[in-house]
Image 1 (cartoon, rainbow, N blue to C red):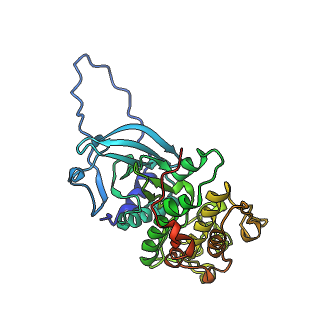
Image 2 (image 1 turned 135 degrees about the horizontal axis):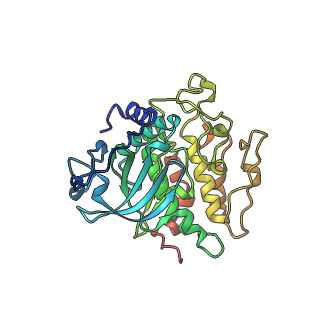
Image 3 (image 1 turned 90 degrees about the vertical axis):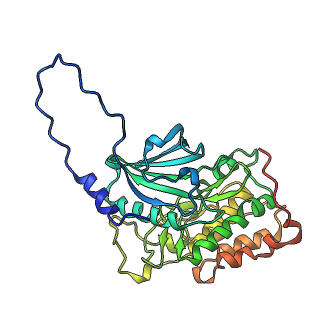
Length: 344
């Protein structure tokens, strides 16, 4: 479970002034006292109900993991591949550096852990646990050996997947994951290739809940996500600078239909090789992607109809994730066999 005081604790650690330097002391000839190598105690913020037995413990520490390489570096965090030394299992460590995390990010970080901890599904990256030290906040996650869909897609010679690969390898499991999330009131808000991962046996895993929101607890009224995949109703919203910005304006509210738009853009990109050329207004917000859809001549009518349905302009007219998963393109007889891994 998530500790209730996470947000205030992190805020205190960020706002606490650095101690004044101690006055210089005389050099002693005595041998130094031995230094304790035991890491400082950490505070457990979340543990998964599906935590592997070998990873269960009372106290969590960075010392429990052998880092092998860095996978990603952002402004406030970095992601590392590591091995749990107790269980031998590979994991991904998402490490936030508390001295770099602005106050505006604290609310989102707290929300990310709450949402991801409760999202237990075969097609979602598992958050094994999260803990806080004096300098870091660490999320311990399932490791996806094949990397993300962005890397897979960019490694293909013509930047295109076959239709059966798009449906079987990506869309079916992705829509299953979204159906699960949407039924629980969770809106992912950042569907894109970089947030879709694959295990060693090519099982899809949806990850990165950094901008996700629980619609049962708060109103979605912020421009969040990635512009190329952003639904019109999201792109018209203002940016947020404080946690409660725009929350009192119901006219800005949007729902899980924005994830369906992201699925439509993603499907188009995998089939064509790039995202639609989306017109934008003077504020940089997307207006519509519908008018810029150009498919390869060999694209089936079913796949064209699938993308057009997902990219319905009015969010209330878009299909749900469950409805979209029942589209004939995904259910046709020649698509029923399991998709083979892409030839990369």
